[in-house]
Length: 154
Image (cartoon, rainbow, N blue to C red; front, side, top):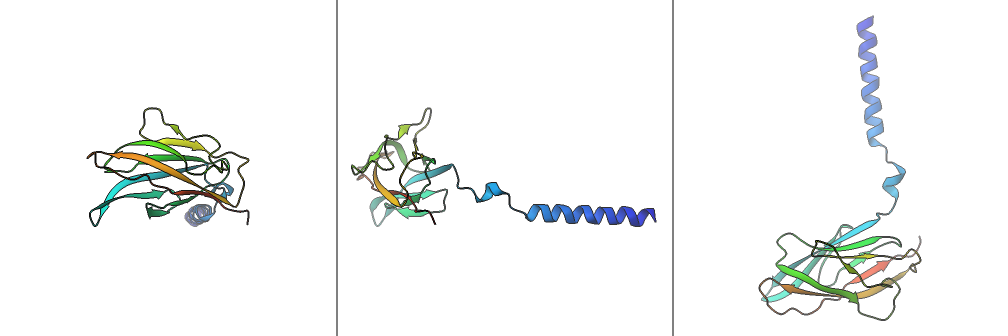
């Protein structure tokens, strides 16, 4: 009798763990408060390009559109084996000043930049920005103009 009770308790305990592990918390549905954009220089048919990918699973060559929410912090970092010496500057390409109310700031002890998207940023908008960077091999590269996008409320 005692063995059956112990066995039953163990089975109930395991089922409880499996059910709890399959549940999502409310925090999982919340938008991320940080988006990291990684940069890597690549060569395609003899021409230098910028491969960009972010933590939203977006990836593009020279023209990334990163979706962000108001209040999100955007961080630009060099990817592994990036072939990039440093990010020279990141700044808005247009005078919209919707998302880039302030210029991104250079990260302390890092080779990246950081921008806090204002909480009052208008939804349903995007803004083009410019990335200037230098390569380790000192070859010339044109500035790249990707986008940050704040989607409308569903």
